[in-house]
Image (cartoon, rainbow, N blue to C red; front, side):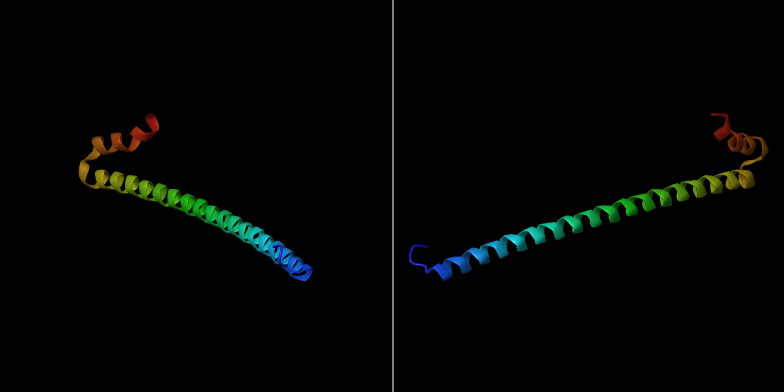
Length: 86
């Protein structure tokens, strides 16, 4: 840096500031992107949990109807009432 003119030194200093600003802006954008990805993952998780609950409910209803249709009277009735007794 000793052989640089004053203009070159100022120009170099300005370029270094621009580089630092660009790096800061890049970091800001990356953080925003990560925040957005986290929000999307949370939405997906909630949706996935909801779908699992729906499938479990449907399965339980199907099993109850199957027991009623094929399992006989008293056993089906006990199976139907058992979840509420617990």
